[in-house]
Amino acid sequence: MRRGIATFTLDHGRCPPWLFERMVRLGREMVRVLVEEYGPDEFIERIADPVWFQSLGTVLAFDWNASGLTTVLTGALKEAIRGEEGNLGIFICGGKGKTSRKTPDQITFWGERLNLPKSSTEALVSNSKMSAKVDSSLVQDGYQLYHHTFFFSRNGAWTVVQQGMSAKGGSARRYHWFDRLTTDNGQLTTDNESVDFVNEPHRGIASQGFEKDVLNLVAGKSSKTRQTSVDLIRDGYKRVKSDLELLRKHSNEMSKMMAVRISGEEYTALELSKRDFRHHTVELEEFADSKYLDKILQKLSYNKPEDYQSLVATRGVGAKTVRALSLVSEIIYGAKPSYEDPARYSFAHGGKDAIPYPVDRETYDKTIEVMRKAVSKSRIPFTDKQKALARLS
Image 1: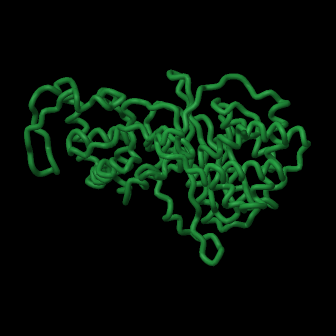
Image 2: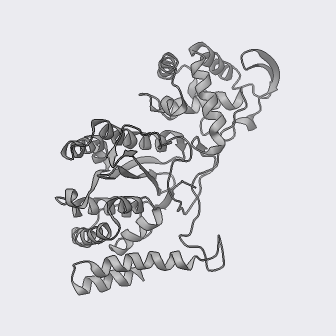
């Protein structure tokens, strides 16, 4: 199962300079050892594991359950490898707030420095943008993204670690992605088909809580909704426009029997009750007289995207557009999406009471040993090593 979301309490304030400096020093050594032992691609993939990522932050001395671990750890790692990116073969772009918006430029900078094929650099930039769009538009869980970091290797392995916040719930949620560009005889190619951004795209699972009625359009259960949305757009603007108008017209009369067009040919009586809308986080009135939404729908209908990923990738398409198409797909055409929060409770190696599954001792010991070896081989003062090993324990 390739999903990954972790939820933590929302932090305020800044990391003390003395702590950040220590995290940078130990982080530099941890990265060096891990890359020497396992290679840059393996390091990139490990960052995509939410539990491993959390463990690394804890070993480097940050609070294990604080949202600040994400922003501070990625910042410390970026600073730790500064000037050594070429030797290590790993590159870190983006960050928190305004820095996250610099990610495409930073990826392009490294692509030019590494003399990567232009198509490969463009694919990495596209992957960065799409992962952000998916977690802000297709997983409508009430968390607003404010952090985005893009890790990649010279060989095209890439990981995204991004985080959103919920001011209402006072918590943060972290999303992890991993994939790799296709290679041909060791050379990166233009083929990027291995990446499926709209069907169970995340990597790993670790969460502390669930949200109710999350519109999850990347779930496997939402495949019919995604296809119906594409069909609606490809059939032309008039069709999707008339369907939306139908929902707008009857949004306040859902308890009445009405004629609803099915497949553009047959007509049947369908009772639209309020329970059909109980999962949606907004009322139908949001789509009434929306000139911007109409403009985007016209644009999509003109472009006729081949698939849902192309639809979502279209400039201007956001949460409101995909929600409107989802609403039409469900209520009129019966293509109900998933409303299940993709977040899951997960224990890295099982529980002592065999919940959710028996302890995998081999994996458990291997994880500890990997961290212990990295700390032991790091070139830091003995006292710092002992403290790091104590945190690992």
